[in-house]
Image (cartoon, rainbow over all chains, first blue to last red; front, side, top):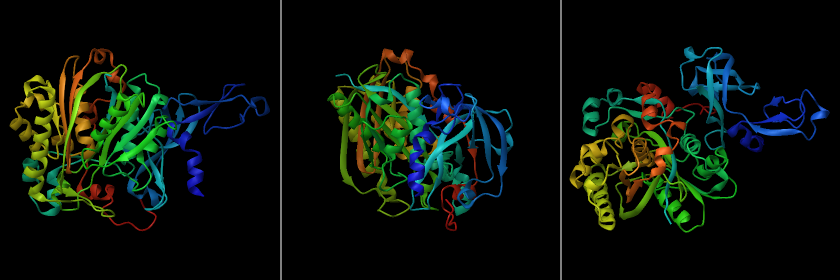
Length: 132
Length: 352
């Protein structure tokens, strides 16, 4: 079940595909069929767009008590990123020391392993962010 | 039809470990080992990096530097001996990440350290025959050496991607020649976590015989001599072998300077010559001629004679990081961290 669920979102996770409402212009990520602001007025007007991959740290937390699958990476930073298009998303910040991360820090998207279903299972890849 | 490199991109992980640190743990003279191999540090992938992520970083950099639509890519090959899956092509994930799929052919290639250049040759054939408009060949590895083995001082990680085509070529491939025999100098059996090697047997009958034969064979076919080339890059399992073979063949230190990366980042296996060639292309100007010889254990060599074209002058090199920039971004780690990152510590179920 997990394999199919992750697979459905591969394109979104690999290339930061969002939707833009053709009625009000609001960008949503992950993509939606209906705009959360315009509702019915957005029907059939949701356009798929690529986020630029550039953004800044809106807020963050350093994780010291990590889930088992993230033991190798702790301590690590999980952050809310405000993308250039205005939409916010949650992602790990990598390729820098935890102490270097700050609110307002410019970051850009990259692609890394985000998990795997055990040593014999499917590997999941997705976006993480590095200092810009 | 003129076939050549339309664009390229490179990637090297930022973590490094020094031979002194490896020697400290195993009770060997790391300083002497490093000097003997001519390696002062080697790259180490982060726990969330593998051949797929390295290939994607390199391929995305390659695409940013040119105006080719990913939909015009008809073939993609990832050459590596450390594909994360035994069955499930790395290339499918890379193609999806650069939005090139689905109208294309994809395969993963393995030929020890020369799988990346084998991919370049395959793309040359497909482009030259008109079967595809553009092909992508990637050489990348996150190679492993068994704990305590001599390989641990050199086996590192990195890769480079090449877009092969016949339009807007920045570097024309004038010719390619391969020299291949059945020589068991280095191997890894199915299901084994670490490779085995023939020790000193990896030198004269393997590396030197094949690199020398391929180099001479290529120059004979092209009617050239070492002094005709501005730069040269040879496979580099350590710093010593390529330096010695270059001298034996008649190339000077200046010609191999840019392409010799192993002293700083270790042996990136399938990434070695692709990365060395990328470092050279980072520094070339139109008219420069490049000699490249990749070697893969088992054993074989792929040789390339390349001329940089006028298109290099307007090529967007700055749209992706240069190899030098990637090599400057480093963080040294100790052996314990290295062992943790490389999966050499047994974890309880559920961990990575």
